[in-house]
Image (tube, rainbow, N blue to C red; front, side, top):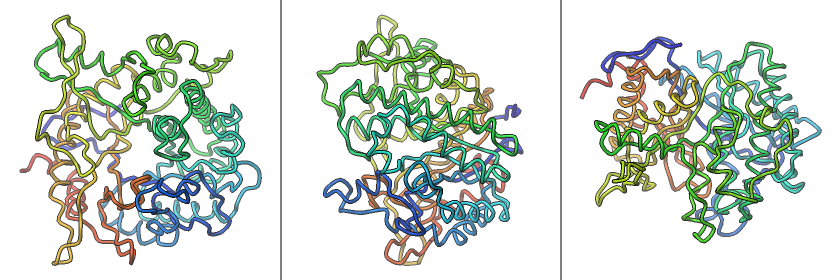
Amino acid sequence: MSKPVSADSSFPVDFAWGVAAAAFQIEGAANADGKGLSVWDMMCRQSGRVYEGHTGDVACDHYHRYREDVAIMRGIGVKAYRLSVSWPRVIPGGTGAVNEAGLAFYDRLVDELLTAGIQPWVTLFHWDFPYELYCRGGWLNRDSAEWFADYTRVVVDRLSDRVGHWMTLNEPQCFAGLGHYHGVQAPGDRLGLAEVLRIGHHALLAHGRSVQVIRTQAKTTPVIGWAPVGTPVLPEDPSKPADVAAARQAMFAMGPHDPAKPRGEDGFFWANSWWSDPVVLGHYPEDGWASFGSAVPELRADDLATISQPLDFYGVNIYRGLMARAGADGMPESVRPGPGFPRTALKWPVTPEALYWGPKFFQERYKLPVVITENGLSGADWVALDGHVHDAHRIDFLKRYLRALRRAMADGVDVRGYFHWSILDNFEWADGYKERFGLIHVDYATLKRTPKDSALWYREVIASNGKNLALD
């Protein structure tokens, strides 16, 4: 366990200062060297589904420029890089024949990272589900858990002699809820509640089977987690125990499912407990099970035992938080941001305390070390006349959030690492290239990389191991 830090001291010496990206968002080379199609390739070719018809065909061309990108990471001084492997690049049909050229790319990337002194943290699934398996029912098909286990076996067999840190799924809430219920992300389906709950259950089975494969097959001792969305709930007044208790309760409550609500207003897919309780505690939350009624997924005898494989850390992507207070009856009461509340370019509220209360409440409930697997913001960034990218808003954002994270650690929360999303501006899913989350600006016409002021600032955070966060 990492030792607690004081609120004004540096982070633990072994803290994983990192950056993150995902295969489909940066690699490009959509049809190169035998790669198969994914559901995102499919969605990009459907009119009106992605902002201004953007595609991931080229993205940042990381597939061909990975050496340059690793050199940029080394220049920033990052200790770890969270990357994802493209399932259809490795197994074009999703199952069956392995694409040696695809595996060789990840061989080269891992070796380049290690040579640069950067630890690879590999995510096995970051949304690019193989198109051919989608045509066989996709996540609706219970066999998807075994498809994913077989894919895991191929990647682990190839990379685990050099890769020690693994994550199974990224944000199942998004690819299940946004992809199959709301229909705004790939594959763009609008299925019923029962079907989407089945998809979620199969994805959790896939997670469990993947963990089993990693544990039994890894050539070096693995460190395993996953990376769900984290939706922290913050107390309106942290000095009031009743508000803290209300926030904690609201953060893990399912709430009633209201089928009369428009899909865009039904937020049940963001419930932390529905996804994480089965994975860590071995059961679905009772309030969710009761709320969903006959739509709940079929549970076979060993399903929950398979899903709840032991994990080494609780990875979580945290960008923003909600707020609650204790109502007159003591029950949680939602508090909405007032007019003029600070928001990012994507209109997400700026809530630094999400990195205090989120890790605190997750660790209280799940008793696992925490890794912040994504955090960052979209900004209105461009190259200025002086040739630099001046993103003071991102520096201010990160300073506030990282100070909150350090306070959580000072209060005893065991946080092992922080991964900024993202290293490069990239293909931001249905928003195409409209949103810029990167520490590095990418000119999509020329693919020129320009470090933003925030990259230089983050370099100093890493070099000082967080001590400079105390400076104004």
